[in-house]
Length: 344
Image (cartoon, rainbow, N blue to C red; front, side):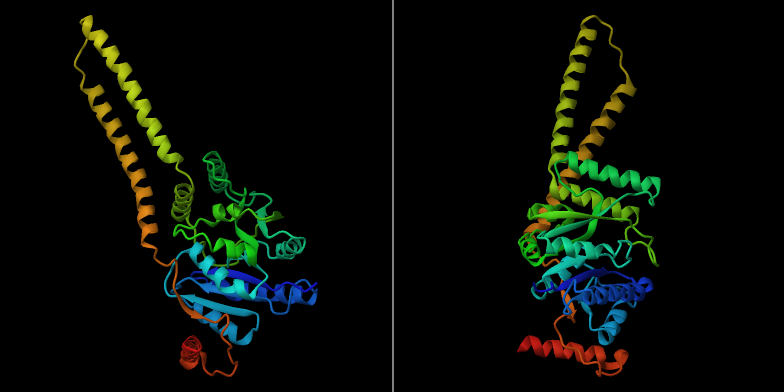
């Protein structure tokens, strides 16, 4: 049986502090797997620069000149982690049998890649990397993360518990993923919808090698909210339920106050009046904001704008190691070669 061609997709955004170590570890991993006859010698590592403003792209470009396994894809602007991941998957799928996505900080254990490929060889087309525990997380992060997965399950969104974006997908699975044309791509929810034969590989999460996390609390909350509103209309139904309950409660209080009026026991009260106004006003603003979020998503979808734009593609472009000085004219020559190849 022919050995599978593996592509490792690594989205990068301002990762200059960690990138050199990441490249070395991943390149060593691919070399070992080739030596052990696990993957083909045509396997590669594709680093996707998501519009970084530091030296991330320069490091990728230099490494691609000296290491045959390392390739680069540069997006024209920051498109977001999920879109950068999609750009790498779609760019590499035609020259790969299976593709693994992993973050540049290498907190996900690269030794689990061997087991993922073995699962693929057994016939699984999607293999999820799942954290065996969250003991290394702070209490707050562990509590909020587990709460998010449980909430999504209650809302009817089937996610793989303790799985992020560390996964293997076959070329066939990525081809099917490309059929999902929506702009708001929440991959943790979309990939299970593909429905192909899948398996889990468990691993322990490592500490970040260097640099700072690209997902602080604000981004994590936004990501979670985007996932909820992209996959479930339950929040809209909850607004309807709250409105219905408020209506029923108001009817009961109306009957109660009519009875008091009938017996002459009513008193004018400013506190109860202003409290009711603030309560109903707050509920209305929440409802309008939530409905607006869904309308905003519909608005984005109707525009059909591209999820990302590729600036430079080093994946399929042959690069001579004798191009010359990288900083001065190597980059321009690559651009020129790419334009020529596109014209022909």
